[in-house]
Image (cartoon, rainbow, N blue to C red; front, side):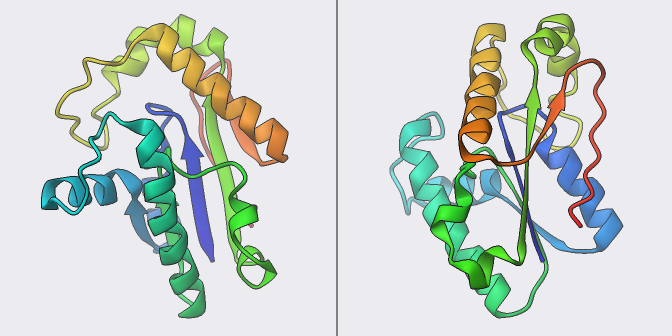
Length: 171
């Protein structure tokens, strides 16, 4: 089984992945780790801030990892903001039957009411070296983008609206 966790930055993708690792014992890959490995090794000249170039670049790598894991009958959790809501379009049925997807989305109401709290939890799971670009309006736009894409693609999502609570049963 492949568990995909998408969504905007700071929504808790890594936190949910960590919970699922503990629950199922699956291996986990973070697209951010792949991204930084490629950038630091010099394999790509795309920068960490060039989201438009990173999205297709990282997804192309990630989808082939997913295919390989399925072919090898390996369980895997993949989390990151570069997983597209239309992920199904990249796989035929022999792969999609083994993939479960969820996108974490914070509502505008939640973000506005809890922005300082969101910022204070930024390093709960991973140690962000520089989080200075986190801005309220940008975070709202990013979450709205993911919500619109999920609705367009009929992709499942967890909406964080009143209080922060994430739990997902992929079965």
